[in-house]
Every structure is written in structure tokens, then in C-alpha cells.
Amino acid sequence: MRRKMITGSVAAVALVASVVLAHTARAATFGVTESDGAYIVDTGAGLMFTVSRTNGDMTSMTYEGRELLSGRASHVQSGFGSDTEVTAEVRGDTIVVTEHAPDFYTDGEIYHYLVVREDQNNIYMATWVDAHAAGELRWYSSFRGEVLTGAYEPSDTAGDTVIESADVFRDGGRTSSKYYSNRRAIDQGVRGLTGDGVGVFMDYGNRESSSGGPFFRDIEQQRTGNNDLYNYLFSGHNQTEGQRTGELYGPYALMVTDGSTPKARDLSFMYDLNLHDAVGPAGRGWIVGKVSGVDRANAVVGWSNPAAQYWTRPDASTGNFASPLMKPGSYTQTLYQGELAVARRSVTVAAGTGTTGANQSSTWAEQDTIVRLGEWDGTPAGFKNAAESTSMHPSDSRLQPWRSAVTGSQTASFPAAQWSGINNGTTVTFDLTEEQLTARTVRIGITAAFAGGRPQISINDWTPKKVPAASAQPKSRSLTIGTYRGNNTLYEYAVPASALVAGTNTLTITVVSGSTGTGYLSPGFSYDAVDLY
Image (cartoon, rainbow, N blue to C red; front, side, top):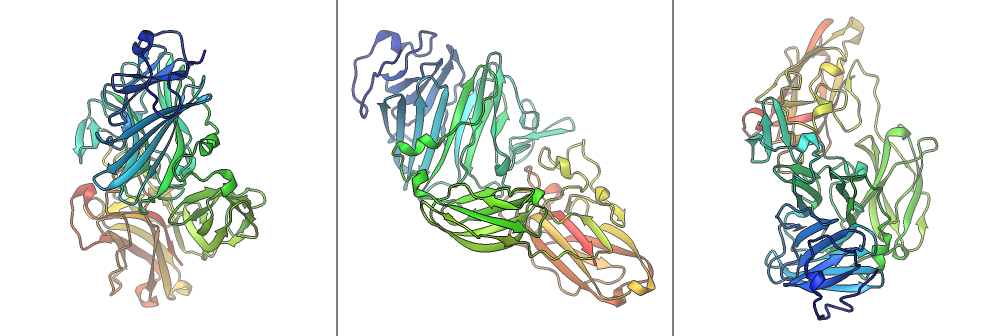
């Protein structure tokens, strides 16, 4: 049964007594009503939620009569403020709640949309923010821990003791944080919280207006006493790009079920709702091409400009690729070998048509190496503690000791990261014959750095006269907040033949920096690979 209690834009209606009892179980009635300065939206399928007409906060969400929210309001950022304009409109089988804050963070402007379709327990959302936005943009929901009891273990901080910056915790030797075990943007699908007969999930949707590219990670959830679910649209959490503003973020969706995990939904209908600066499929184009010179099974093609970002995986058999539908404009197209950028070119997208022939071949130079530690894939994969680097603090007792001395190409014994205050002076011993005593090159790739940390080498008694320059990296914590992803940087060192000896040689890698710090907040970096050739 459908009841259109509000039609057009915020039409005043007489209240019906049974609707005022918005948080009690009752016969489902699709529609939206007004009560006590709020809109009450009913999907007609068991989900109801209440939105303040004063500030746009979602103050209640019930499923089959059970309150799900913890008592904290759900909202974009930390809420919009008291001068928010909130309207509600029924359009056939769709309800659109529009929130407009013309003075967001004093001089900014933001639109946020909450959309419901009849008999679907999903809240579809999109968010537009102008050039004066705050430094973060997120959707935040806090749910009752006693109802939604399931918690993702690495982000379960309930009862733990703070050890870093009020957001990293320890319980015995186990560490936890909302930063841990968050997925790369390219891997983000539906994730959420479950309880007895109920589940709430986030469909992270379109990341085209977010920043950081296909491999960026950000907060998805955290359990304290409550169970919180996020969609971070932009943050300063080791952010490698600036915020895209004047753009519509999304669509994305909050999905409520009986506890079963839902599939991602087709969100394209949102482009037909006249949302602020929405660009529908007809106004987009695409790119078609083929990659070569890379392991196609581990390749990614990405596109980026000041307005948008996109990516795709080429066909592993043929190397052919086709982009998602993209906004018109000029883009930098990047070919990645794993997460390492190995080629770039410019391409142009026009509305309503495809750009063909955007082929791309790797420019990465492989070498015949004497020592090879790791793989040139833009990640520390294979190194000691690398597998846990996104799911726990580097001080976690479950990790192996960080200090390392390895012989030859023993990747699994080599540390994934190095800090001046923890494990400085990693050594690698290797043997050379008389015939191999020629000028050599050492290549060290890093994936992220903190406090200006960068690698300096010595071989036997020889050290380069020049200290390498710091890499360009975000000005935030990195290696302690569950990410190795910064700006990949390659360091190369020309080693004279006179530095080498026949027999055993020792390569020592140290962290150098003009900054100071202690422990895991001392200057440091994470490794991609190390070559001697």
C-alpha cells in the first residue's frame, strides 16, 4: 500500500496519528510524513528513518520496528548546522529528500540527497560539495552495538587502550583501529554490519569524485561501544591527491537486510533525478585500447583529471580494455604494473562516443640483477610483515621483529618498512666474482614515506657523497594507519667498481631525514623492491 503524504516540495499535510508513532512496528506504508520538525520516510518494506528538517541529521532508523541507530545522528561530515534547507518530495515510486546547506563550514555550500524506492530497504545517496568544502567529506552512521553485534576484528577497538593519536588502540599485544583492513578503492564492494535478523551494509558505489586513485584506502567501519559504518568520500588520511570540488560524489547506498549480504545495486537511476551537477550516461563517453609489456593478469589502467578518476582491469588473455562511462574531458591515462605506474599518456573523452586506439605499453626497464628483493609492483608484497601492514599497527606482537639482515635475494626476510627509530641499518650480503667487479647500480623503490624518510646506502666502506632528496608525500601519518600507499618513488645509486670486492659484499640501507621522531613515528618508508645490477 502506498500513501503519498507529501507531494511536490515539502507540502504541508495533516498528521495522521498512526504515522506519528514512527518507531513502532506497524503495517508498512510507503510514503513520507512530517512530525515534530522532521520527515519520516517509510520504504513500505520494513525500513523507516527520520530526518531533521532543521539540520538534515538522520535521527532514527528502524527495521521491522527495531531501532538501529545508537543515539548518535547519521549525517554527512559532522552535520550541516541549523540553517540547512531540507525538502522532501514523492515522485511516483521514489522519494527524494534534499538537504542544502548554503553556509557549510562558514563559506561553503553542499547538497546531500537521500533517495528511497518503494519496497526497497535501501537509502540511495549522493553528495555535492563546492570549492570551499571542509578538509574531509564522509557519510557516517553509528548503530547500536547490542543490535548490530558483528564487528570486523581489526577495527574492533571496544575496550582497548589508546596508543597513538586517539585513534590507534592496543589490547595486550593486539592492535586495532578504524584504519585497519580497509580495502583498496578498486576492490571496494558491499561491506557492513550484522546482528540477529538484521544487517546494514554500505554499497560504496561510484568513486569518480573521490581522490587517491584505484589503490587508495580509507575508513570503512569501527566498533567502539557502538558499531559505526562510514563512506569516506574524501579525507586527509595519507591522501595523495587534493579534494575534487564542484562535483557530485556518488551515487552510493546504505542497504538494510535480514542479515544476508546484499549484492551491489544498479545506481544509474539516480542520474534521472535532477541531482545537482549529475552527469547521466548520455552525457558521458569511454576509452578503448590495449596494454602490452606488463603482466596482464596484474595490470590496471587508470584515468584522472581535476574533475574525476576512473579505472579498469584489462582482459588477462588479450590485454584489451574498455573504461567505465566517463565525464567528458582530457585525462591522464596511467598503466599500472600491480600498483606501480609504468606508463602515462593523455586521452580525451567526448560525450556519447568512444575514444579508440588508446593503447599503452610499459616503459619500465627490467634489469638482469645480481640481487633482487621484492617485485616491482608498487607494493611491499612478499616482504616480512607486508601481509599484515594494512590490518595492524607495526608494533603489534603478532608481527615478526622488524630488524633484518639478509643474504642475497631473501625477500621474505627483508622488512616491508624501515624507521630510523626502530630498525635502521638493514643489511644485505651478496657475493661477487672477479669478473663481476664492474660499476653497478642499486635501485630502491619506496611506496610511502613518513617525516621525510628516504633510503641512503653504503656498500662495504663506500657511501655516496650526495644524500638523496626527500620524496613528495602526503603530510600525514602513513605507515601506522594501515597503508603502504603514498607516492611511489624510485632511488638510483651509481656504485663504482672500486666499492666492490671479490667474495662477500655488504649493502647497508639506512633511513635519512631532516626531521626527527621516535619509534614508529620516526622518519621511515615502506619498500617496493631493491635491485643490484
